[in-house]
Image (tube, rainbow, N blue to C red; front, side):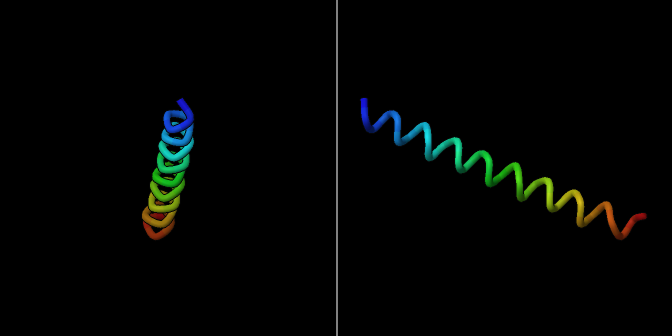
Length: 34
């Protein structure tokens, strides 16, 4: 059960990182267009 908890934390951090990178990428592509 302990491993499951660590897996959930790892997955959440990974998902959050992807979300942040995606958001930064959108901001960078949106800036030159405007």
